[in-house]
Length: 501
Ligand code: BES
Ligand code: ZN
Ligand code: ZN
Image (cartoon, rainbow, N blue to C red; front, side, top):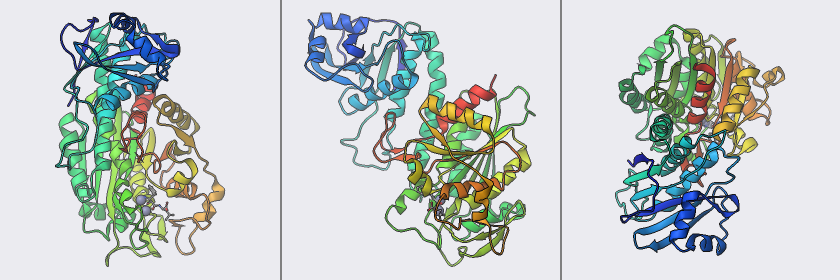
């Protein structure tokens, strides 16, 4: 773990340092301290900018090796426009510090960005946002590697300049809670499916969240049979691993009886497709089919760490979808918890079977103010939106607007997709109330959402199809390749902005 410190001292090092990070705005305009450094180095920084393509845009960087007897390296980072700063841009700049220095021997870093601030972002927020980007980017999933040469290693200590240490520290505390939630989710999604299966996942929730004050209930297969979770059990019945339903409750609100906001997650710890088995190419990606549940796990860690003043419940539907002699068959008919009968025409459309019971249970037991489900539900959403936007489906315009807006603010973008009663015809079954796949070829994500809608009652509800955004095999601004933790930062912002206060 990297130690993050804040200081209000700003001067050129008088002892040897591994790395000094300084900044420049658009048009190669150095910050006041960077100008001072340039002066001490007889104009080397300005000459370096002239000799390179560095302009000062966010994502521009320039490294100077051994520029001074006491400084092993200087990393100049671009900060964009000083008048139109954006939080996400500053986080991105922080991520670049990690990207460019983690592969060097530098272990003690000094980040000296003296930014005057603007009306949107106060100057004491700049360093915590840089630290946030740096910490998010620093996570790398490598604990199974026994040969550790050539792996990025954590910094020992990063010291950030800030004009106001106390204010920066309290800002950092909140961002750190978000970072820890996000990293928890990424760890769960990246971890192998022989290690994360329903029982072990549920135990991790108990071990990690209970000590933080989250109430954790775990229902096992016997409980679920008694409770009538038949569509969820039907998915689980082909696997040697028993299913689990985890119910998380965070009572942070002033009035503990006030209706909560509910989050429901698809937690298929491995989706082989079942008897409708998937093609082998890419099947390994289906270890991430529990990302919805993983996101809610991470979100609750964040809420507890920052003592969020909100009432929230999180329901994780944990199963493994496997083919075997006990697996469900295409054409089975199952009675869901809500009472609706479902004809299972494709065992690979299993997420909606898990969610059907979990959603019905959630609205019935908790009567939430709003219910949001997260699921890697359809390949069709990846066809429609790729990896930039997650699909948003909702029966409620204001809830949608709030989610869309928070997504833009944190860089976890959503795109609203339609629901319409005409699509319902597509999931009419010949012999049961509903079937689990659409008849036509098109609109696979919409018919999946229409299916879910049958199990949400009249609660304001939103469904986020995160199949395209939960992982990234190239890496993104704030993350190395692998899981992204998409949704933790978005939903934390959503709760803070609309339900706290
Ligand atoms: N888990 C998959 C969806 C998925 C696909 C997630 C790609 C992440 C990346 C889901 O259970 C599934 O298999 N859906 C089917 C539905 C179909 C059978 C109607 C699909 O999308 O092909
Ligand atoms: Zn599937
Ligand atoms: Zn699935």
